[in-house]
Amino acid sequence: MNSNNLSFKKLDASTVSAYTEYAKKVIKAEPFLNEVECVDEQAVLKRLSDEFFKSSESLLAYKDGAVVGRLEYHFYGCPADGAKMAYVGWICVLKSERHCGIGQALFKEFEKECKNNGIEQYFLVAAENSEAASFYNAFKNAEIKTQPVLRKNV
Image (cartoon, rainbow, N blue to C red; front, side):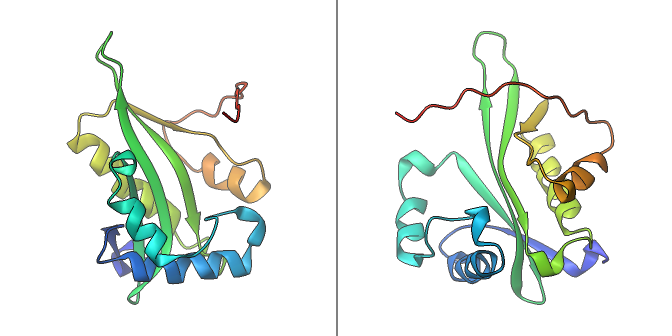
């Protein structure tokens, strides 16, 4: 796929309907992914106006007027040393649209956002399946490290 056939928009009130249609397709094709807890447009709209979620962005990839992929991220920094970083919380392309460059195009668009905001580095917790490994291995100038992750429900 030529990434010129894609356009990108951020998730907001004007794109929430297209996003929820995409999320329904993800859930139907791969319910085990847990892309979203539920596809409730009003709940998403409510969260979009909630201050708590203001630091998170979802970059949507559009093809032929429909959302085909999403990359969720947030920027953060360390006041002690001034480091500016980003965390990618989610990347998902519709199963029917994979292996066409959409995920790579989402990351390219995201990296533009990083550069525009002085972000020095980003990271994500990588999925552990062969399809994801193939995707991550295609990144240039990146390294995959296995590190322990502490996760605790509060």
